[in-house]
Image (spheres, helix red, strand yellow):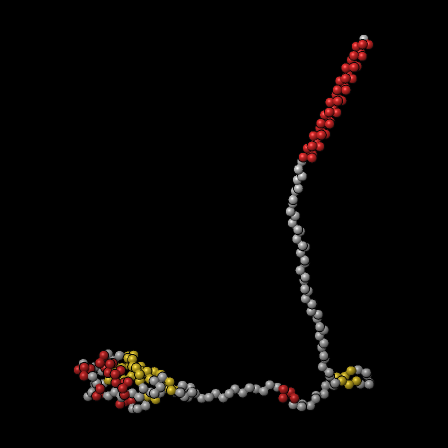
Length: 218
């Protein structure tokens, strides 16, 4: 039994020694590999870009407007002549009217007199010669005599600055074309007018309305 026990102990010791040797070899192996691995790892540099922080915004300078200071209003009271009586020691207002020096009248505004209105010199045109001689029975158209036509012709004529008839328009027919045409043919040739005037008395062109009555000759 003793020999068996000794043999068992020797075997156990040997196994422990072998285990220790293995552990030592493994530790040495691992340590060496780690050192080699560490020496062979390349150095990695990480470059990072950093943005510069923007400068702090300056607060805008607020220009404060100077506050308007209310100026005291000084009221000047009118000075009224007074007199102090010694009897009752009261203030008595003198209501005596001062003599009028005429200063108020001088300071009063003088009324503005409007300029005088100039009389107007305007006038209408008027016949300058005998109107009855402008158109007579001698001017009666033969066709109208044969047709025994007669009547009044209303016309409007244009008169220039010299008083001459420049145009004639029939505004009311006599009922006969020959009488109407004869009126506007003869009237500008024979009619003469004093020209119309404006407010300043200058001759101006204008129009004139007239009626010419045609009667068959006896």
